[in-house]
Image (cartoon, rainbow, N blue to C red; front, top):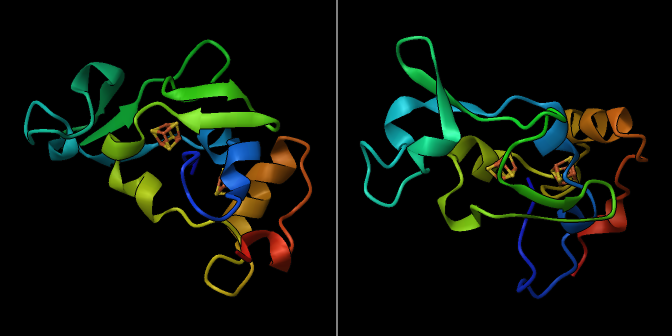
Length: 121
Ligand code: SF4
Ligand code: SF4
């Protein structure tokens, strides 16, 4: 999910952000900073059932931590404190194989799937 700009290779997420727009970001409640110091800011989350939280979403449906213009130029304002589900979400081909959820998010935002070359340094 949306990255940051000081990485040595061109991160395709910086031109995208689709997964931060399309999918609801939910995670175990104790990842938030009212349970874990330095965790996800609880004020940016909503409770979802007894054991989970989700990132708040703005009127346009996207995660409130996403900055910029999806599909063009984005970054995550919480990069160092983003939930585990965001850390674990891999762009297509980052592990050498296609990524259906990445490609589906991009398709729903009107973007083409990532090619194999997208993650080459
Ligand atoms: S949909 Fe894929 S390329 Fe786009 S931000 Fe998410 S992981 Fe990155
Ligand atoms: S916390 Fe950051 S990486 Fe996770 S959905 Fe929100 S903007 Fe995307």
